[in-house]
Length: 81
Image 1: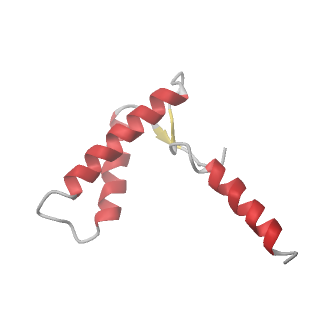
Image 2: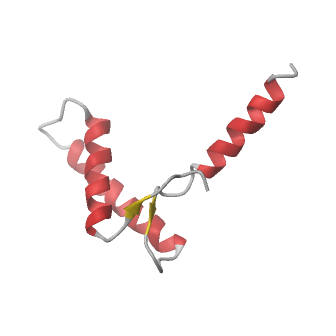
């Protein structure tokens, strides 16, 4: 039981840091980054869920969303902030 509580707190802290989009752009506000990420991820998900279906859909969604965000001028960053 003593190990469970610290592990749970650590998991919650990491999960809280992973709620932001994993991209950054100088001068962009968080709401703009979130909106762009939602748009890119939604478009990538729609493309993957339209026939013909790819063999590894989650990988394709991540790659397509990443390419979309890079095209909009964002750079990848760590989610732990």
